[in-house]
Length: 365
Image 1: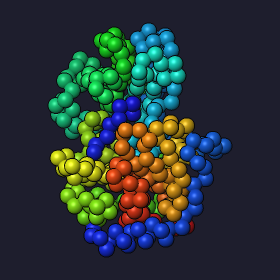
Image 2: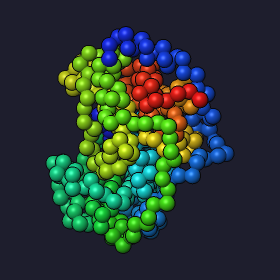
Image 3: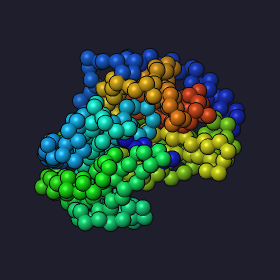
Image 4: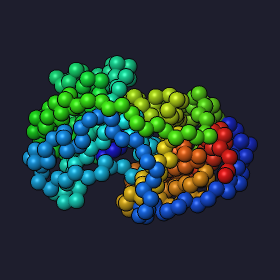
């Protein structure tokens, strides 16, 4: 997403894990990141709401708020780490993703953007609304709603987010980098009204069967002491995922082992060297692997093929100040995303990916 949101077993075991990673002799990925691929991937899920992005608001109306240079484009977020995998999990749950920006001809420091996610069957709304209300006050949209405006990067990046429940659909709307955010209020209302008039279609896609078996919880996937030893940080402990975007808890990685597993660890925030680590597993996501890794990659987020893990793998570290690294693996149709910082490094993250593959029962083809 444009504003990044994220949550946040002994030395002998680490030696075993590193040896296991070296021994896994899986094939090299079929394409380098950003390469064009003739086969965009397997048939995947489709959005379950009965409207398309163009039905939510007229492009002229969007341009009237965000600027004449605004065009519809792909939802942001190249693969590598947990966010892209979370987006794919939401797609598997039938979410509609829409995005308009002036990124191609932007006039400001950061692009003006309208982002929309519409997720049917928002059964987790009642569970997370109390948490949501702690930082986003109630608003008068839909059946229930919360919204807030804030800024980051020293105030240079401005954004307003709306979480709205509309007839069982969780609607997330973000309007970014407007001089006066209030000018977008009528546009937000138009989107809410369009979703209110939409119907939910029955699902016609289900995740393909896989030999990967998810454990019941994160400790069974990777024991905390193994994570701590692998990244050489003694005070690592499990942590709850961030609530910066609560609809993520409704489906996919955040809805339990039946769909996916999202795990996170960190040392205390008061530590001299922060050491956050995230490991996410999404079965049945092989349909998205080829097309996601064929996305153009910005120079700030390079990736290279990473042999020796699963059926295919890529890794990289950000080339900017964001201080993030990742190792993403495809194994028997399951997508495993491991992310951390540059202090952890790709080698340690790859060791955790190898340990996760072992816990998942993956065997080299």
